[in-house]
Amino acid sequence: MVSSRKNRNKLSFGFTLAMLLPMVVFVVLYFLSKREITLGEYLVSLWRLGAFLKIMSLCVLPNLILFLHFYRIKYDLAARGVLMATFFYAFVVVLSKAL
Figure (cartoon, rainbow, N blue to C red):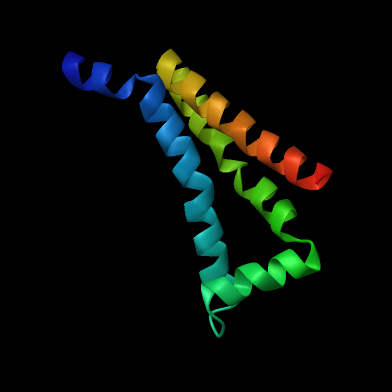
């Protein structure tokens, strides 16, 4: 049991999960909303409407649950990885809005 804990309490584990979770949430939102168009067309339409960055910002919110879960079970390194990935997403959004 201890070796399993060490494998999951890594910065890379938390970072990877936190990078993938918003993408999974975005794909789920796509399947719940517009299945009659392709994912590529959906992305282009969101970008043209100026809604892509707003939706991606909302898709990052489940990272908060992941962070709190890791914090509660004392996976400090994994929680730090989640925080790093969330700041990465925030940096990309701010950079995209600035350009």
